[in-house]
Image 1 (cartoon, rainbow over the protein chains, first blue to last red):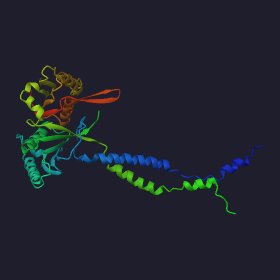
Image 2 (cartoon, chains in turn brown, yellow):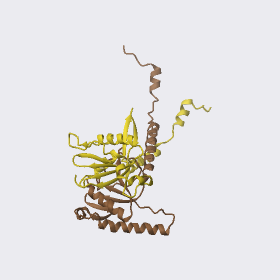
Image 3 (cartoon, rainbow over the protein chains, first blue to last red):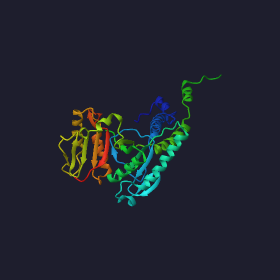
Image 4 (spheres, chains in turn yellow, purple):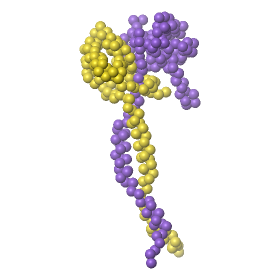
Length: 165
Length: 167
């Protein structure tokens, strides 16, 4: 003989209403949101990495400060996003000086001096960041650094991807 | 006669906070932040042009024998100046540069001369930039891990680079 469910049991089952509990989901989202906002606020000093080049990886953890940016890709030489010259056109020159770069850098230097003369609060900094593709030869890097030095940009930093450890 | 609300119904009323709009906001915000967050960290390495090293190093410059000079050649690394007693670091069996051995040799030299901070690295003109950075890293600092903790020790952070004549 089958045993019928007890009255008590039947009563318990009938008023069940399924509530979707999203409180835990909310907790999770809040944590993710805080994490992402934290990361977002830390990136202020970072520069935009151009799609045209791959930076070399380094163990350096020194933070990036905004400075005049020179990009050396495998095909082009770029200052502050503006193309200065093709690499092919300057690669085989014997001279250490890269004239198109020299002319452009002089313009930027003049601008910095002018800004500093108008607004004394501005710090006259002659700093430059070189973002070079990891495949470029040392000779090219050296020529860019030499040209920077001639114009007066003596504080040169090399941009790298940080690999901690 | 008015009935007193049961305990069960009361508690159900308290849970009725509508979180759906907040969820909607979160669902929009999270993909936006994920798109804008940069997960790759960038850093810089300072390079010094001759004549532009920090003041404390100026005295060293007068005597090149007291500056570590590293030559990166086709066969490996050779040393002169401060590191002239260090044996050359040859390429490893697979034909690639042995940056690990270079790092430990430079670290050993730093222990003998703890006050020296300047180094000159000379490269061949066709050395790829990636290897330039690796050689600079090996000269700049040493990282040791003890029980999962990584400690960094600065070696010769004031690096000047140059091109060497063919060796």
